[in-house]
Image (cartoon, rainbow, N blue to C red):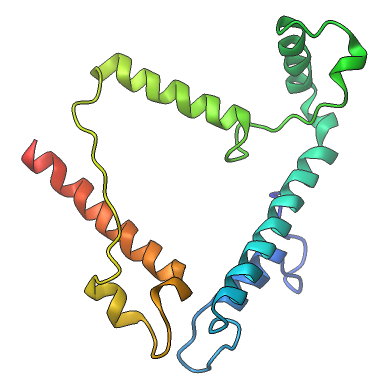
Length: 173
């Protein structure tokens, strides 16, 4: 079972599914939640923290299923010089599939170093910023809204422009 997803019954929804539904933009009805500005942003952050806590609780309660990873954590502690068991405390081992965790970051770092080893050091350092005056953003903002009221829109437009840039780079290299 994946954390945050309920698969047992079609009559139940997970927290993630519920908030995806609540945050959805619909042209048929005006949502006061989506037009609440900074209050909506605070609400969205609070719900994200709730979902992240649910994921972390899932991994905390599934530690018995991750015995081999627990052993590796103890070996890492002893190698780092922590020899007394009382100093180790209770370790919560996060798998590499937990995005942003230490194992995930280590895996990403090793992947990047493998690319450097295979292809050499990078030749370019490209910085791209989002322009709030882009037509794609201005056309989608509702009357009375500002660009900072809809960070999801600016993020989607920026991501689309970044993908366009990634497609153009090989043509000119």
